Length: 302
Image (cartoon, rainbow, N blue to C red; front, top):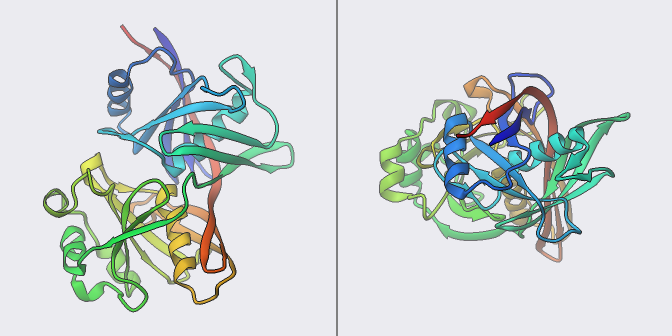
């Protein structure tokens, strides 16, 4: 079996920045075991497999794998996959045109909108498949141990560290200073003891400190998924903008923030996040950014 793949760097406007993604443009006929093995072979944060949609009104079914597990939803894989399909112009024999796409995923329908510069597609944005859900609090001491920082580095005036998500559960913790964010390091042993993969995907640290083009700086660690650190996490930041909007006192709010990630690991990324809040409820969150193509090749499966 010979399969075509494309790799792109997501949430960046230049090669070798942002978050790399492999897209297998025709995953039909592959088993889940084969998809997991291919994702481990690429060893990127995520690999996507594009399948025919179950509903012909939708663009495709998209399955997303880290090197160790399948994900129900993720941000940069959707943005990168939409970018690739728009450039390919076809998906499983059907033309891909217009400004929107709909992907079928385990977490629900993911609605995509292309970003253009003139006639050229340069990126995409997504609407989260689920509304923000805020769950259990997590002790600052556990977050500090898992990230090799001090409990006092964690800012609790706005919120305690907590599990939240829009389809993918993560721990969100605000830090007091940019210095602490730069110093953080994941400890897989603490994740395994206190934050197992069945409970959360990872920890998303952030600091509301404007630098250069960004309003927020963040880092995401998911060592139990084979991702010691992620350069750009759309699923985390689409929930983060919703969490920040939820915490704001205004009952009605349209909030937009530019978020930087990957800076401390040498893969700078920029994500454009938006949230809509009505009558005290966050009703919609979106995340988007630019993409650049890097490689194209074939997989030869025995």
